[in-house]
Amino acid sequence: MPKLSLIVTEAERLIGRLPEPKQRALQQALTDLCQGRWREMRGPEPSTTLAHALWSVTPPLADLFADSYAASDPRLDHILQGHKPALGLALLTLAEIERGDAEGARLAHETMMVFESAEAGAHYAERIAAALRGQLEELPVHRHASRPPLWKSLAVIAAHTGRCDLKAIIQVIRLLAAAPPPSGQPADEALERLRNELCDLGIRFLGIDDHHIRYEQHEHERKPASVRQLGDILIEIRQARLG
Image (spheres, rainbow, N blue to C red):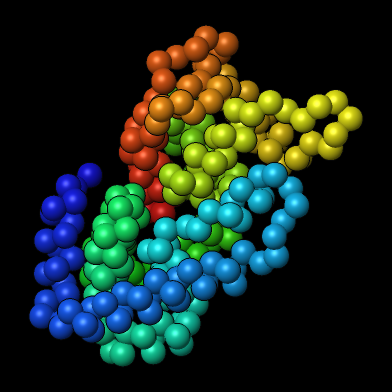
């Protein structure tokens, strides 16, 4: 995974000599468009636990940019004013760094690099759009056979939720680690289906403490995984799903 200093250098290379006031205006317009697109996509507030958790976490700006591109959203064309999509993504990369979102910056940089080829960018954007809507076909199970159980468990969560971003996955793990509802109260069927599939892998999440995820594997507690480890695994899963 590239260092943030290299990401900044490559983003600035694409931006070139665009005046800073113009950069700021484009960054803000692109951020507003992406956040607004999520509000349009996600629809009314859902009542079920898992759906509400996903509804409340905005996907990475780069994914929403790609979704707008895949939909040929005229608002994106209006903002870019003839600039290439890769330049817009370079601006979002720097915006994410300024907001302190390292994961968002790395994903924006990754998308920026893909969009240096118009054909590759269009294909990638279509895959992102399908993933955000839960319409992306999943890899055959045998493709994950050599992966460790924690990797497989995160791939299962990504497949169930359509999300590969760390913030969303962390919220899902918090729900999985929480105590089930008392007897007599309705359970979230989608959450329970996910929990059962993870149980089939022998994985049970116990909680998140001090930026580490505690979990059991076949009823034995394992060494906690750091949030950064989860982020690295999710990047691998994302690349496998979108490649």
